[in-house]
Amino acid sequence: MTILKLENVSLSLDEKPILNNLSVDFWEGHIHAIVGPNGAGKSTFSYVVMGLSGYRNITGTIYFKGQAINNLTVYERARLGISLGWQEPARFEGLTVAQYLKASKKDKGMSIEEAMDVVGLSPQEYLQRACDKTLSGGERKRIELASLLVMQPELVLLDEPDSGIDVEALERIFDAINILKERGSTVITITHSMAVLKKAEHAFLMCHGDIIDKGSIDKISGYFENKCIPCDHKNIPVLGEVQ
Ligand SMILES: Nc1ncnc2c1ncn2[C@@H]1O[C@H](COP(=O)(O)OP(=O)(O)OP(=O)(O)O)[C@@H](O)[C@H]1O
Ligand SMILES: [Mg+2]
Image 1 (cartoon, rainbow, N blue to C red):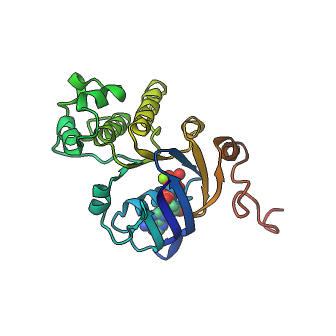
Image 2 (image 1 turned 60 degrees about the horizontal axis):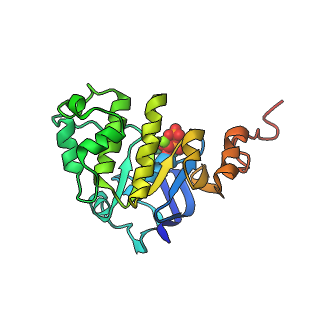
Image 3 (image 1 turned 135 degrees about the vertical axis):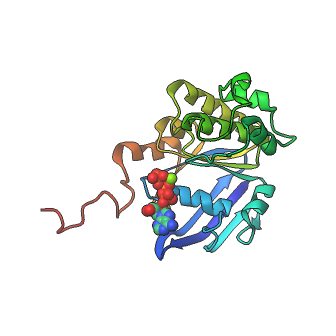
């Protein structure tokens, strides 16, 4: 069953088209991956689905579980169960890690201690620390993932979940993604990593603000060897420009 559907979604920012008539469906309870070059519009896609301010002025329709959500605020979408793990996770000045995770906690999510164990951060060492710039980028990324585990949203968008993550911790990130799925979440990862792509069940290639190819992981992983081959306006020199 489709959980998230975008139908002819376009968005311009500062008069520049960023999303171009994008139509795509995601399956409830499955893990999906979106790959594509820098600037393709992947993070923008996640902001538009989340309904962040500055990303609401779209044409087309976003459906979540069959309901058009264009007019809903970010808070209303969060209440429906849509959640985003940021490419650059936010800091929460003035909160400890424990307070931040407690604010995210929902009954159906796992306990705070369990979630910290899954992401490989010792609760004793981290829970009383400030959730601010004194945490490293990778630590913040893992704590944000722990916040999603305690929340267990219906739909989790993960923007580059592996960025800044060391080799060993990457396995913890994969464990977290699998747990989210096993416990019923739909997951959409956005990634430049073949390893993250391989953990998905369905893959999408995004270029110039549109999904230009989709299918099996094997099919879409060809992008990493061949770059944006299915796309006719990227990585191909314009005739006459190249001597
Ligand atoms: N407010 C804005 N005004 C103008 N252009 C913008 C604005 N925000 C984003 N863009 C442009 O939109 C395009 C898509 O950006 P986006 O961050 O979605 O790309 P991405 O696919 O996530 O790239 P990356 O892989 O580097 O994270 C980029 O060309 C970016 O410069
Ligand atoms: Mg991005």
